[in-house]
Image 1 (cartoon, one colour):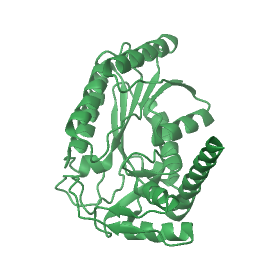
Image 2 (image 1 turned 135 degrees about the horizontal axis):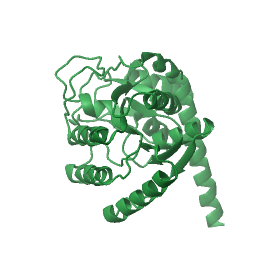
Image 3 (image 1 turned 90 degrees about the vertical axis):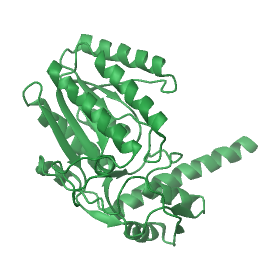
Image 4 (image 1 turned 45 degrees about the horizontal axis):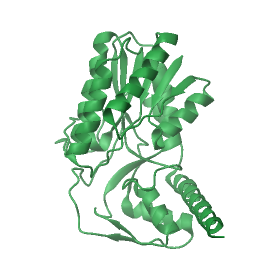
Length: 309
């Protein structure tokens, strides 16, 4: 099965590794995201080429530069590009997987945690509204016979995260520790979040896509991808201290309302057997993330020293 993967961030890179390990015929594309028209041209060109070779191709969309605190204008641009791309997909893929956000989807939900696929999705921020809009766009492909699988992810973390983006508590703690800086957080230390190790998430995505591909054409599925184990920020800091073998400096700043509540516990009621693939304990995941961040930091320091010689 030929699969086109769009987006090579934390999740996209992990999904690429997993699909290659599963011997999937994987295609990727370099997208000039800063220029919407050029990005659209590049995306349509590679999609047309893949579809010409394999009519029953798959599309995996893991792209997105927006964060919880991103402005509405930037997010609207991402949604519009995705809409234009999906509107002109000919032929449409046999299966589309869209990576979405559980925090964005349930940030304003009137239901009580833990949230699952049956909870009411109500955005509490521009970020959440953008994610829900993209979900609706993707679901529209069912009219062309595409099987659509939407994955709402909990807080992903792991090696390889872009440390310059203001997201990813665990990676940001590791970055601050490597730089010997304090990290300010803008929510309470008893805030509950579900942390999912990215390689586990990729294994879940691969298995879920195979299952979705076996369903009738035009079938849509929504699944929450989460570990099912929630931790407070205080618990994350405790585990980080163990990984670092010395205290990290995490301080609480004045709270900002990013449209996500204090309690974002998650669970899945769909294909629950796949949730057993979330195997990495938080302590191990933090240690692996710390090893990656500290290694990257050391490499940058060595490169800087060599440039000065």
